[in-house]
Image (cartoon, rainbow, N blue to C red; front, side):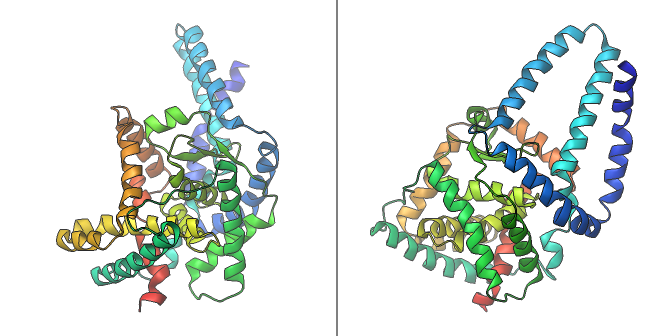
Length: 368
């Protein structure tokens, strides 16, 4: 048994080298893994875990955590055995992580299919003004009062159902009209492949919501069970974007930037006006963040044009996360940042806020 464990532990080295090697061939991963093998793996695991009403992945993580403490205690006096078993476990987890979902990190990035991802200040300013006008209109339609914040009237199951249907609507819309951008065509193909397979509702409220909140996470995709686990403590108004973001991960968009962009277009193309509002709200927040860095005076001018109720929605989310500030969150975020960088996401955790270039490129036909 110990010999087998040694073999498993040592197999981590060739695994890593193989992954590193094939990461230089994103076209191969795109065509063989992401567009074929992964689709069947994803569908298989979803068909199993969707029949379990609670987040089985969370339960497995808890069991593994408890067992790890027990295993550490009984093996602490035998460091050689401890290291062999530790690396054997890491090797198995690394293999299944990459086979089940992780190889999507090395597929062709969406922004590689855009000739120029840079945008001018003029583009940003023009889009921001149009966006403010659009979101003010949506806000007033929902509240009939520019000072009242929008309150999403749906429960968790309804939010999950609408989020799934948004991706079906997105596929129908772009299959019925030609958009002309390669990055949109590829994105919609992935959405279409996802929709064709068994796609039961696998969106669940996380059992680990309190730890997730203190770590600063709104949700996560479990790469082993293919459940989209959502932090149940976050404001309900955050859930359209968070749920859509995790669905995008499951479709195969591993980059946070890409998942944000795909969830954004699923929201603004929704038949549900609340979801349209929160999609445009996300884009506006990205624009304001960038404007604040580039031109503080113009940022304040834009801010004055936004309905007070919209700003109240932003304030609600800010205050929620501010209430859970703690010294451990930066440590967890730093670990996650290194994990993303190890998986070829060069900007690490900053990639969450880098979807603006894709959003501007997507909206360019309407701004010219």
